[in-house]
Image 1 (cartoon, one colour):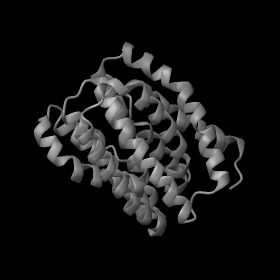
Image 2 (image 1 turned 90 degrees about the horizontal axis):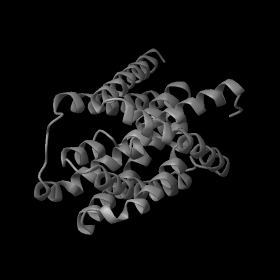
Image 3 (image 1 turned 90 degrees about the vertical axis):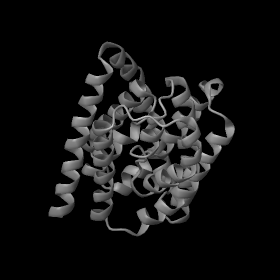
Length: 249
């Protein structure tokens, strides 16, 4: 694909928006970047572009917050199940049509929005969460592999545990990094991820890192509720556009 300057500017804006989300919440860069990139290009391109940003930012966050991690048995069962699920999801990404993949991305976003509005105070006790870590991780992994977005399951699951921000970030970072390693290998094996894609994906790290501090600053100035609602409205618009394009295409 030959990129025009306008396309590069759009990619930069999408990734910068993802960086703002990650800087504000500690997670969720793909939640905004993937639907936006998929709307303009396609789902496979969006997933490939986010590989290196997902890996590098989450490895850094996981190390930075390593002292706040949940017990290893929980973290690695959750992350291991996610890594297994992402292999299944990657096969779906490789062989399903672009229209169906767009619907999967849009559906994942709609589920996330509904969960955030319908059950904002939902809480899962740690004893129950420990039992649910395998099925939750597996489901989130399949969703991540197929659409590049696991947030409807992964972030909602950990949010429901009402974890402190450092604990949440350390846990979700291990989960995302583990999935991304296997996802990249699977995409390479299936012929979707090439050397040129790796260079583009590596370059995508720059705008995300550059705008993460802006997200952190914005989160300090706005109430959490206002920021969350603004993000959800934007996600809803992106998801509706994906559905429209899939149905009209």
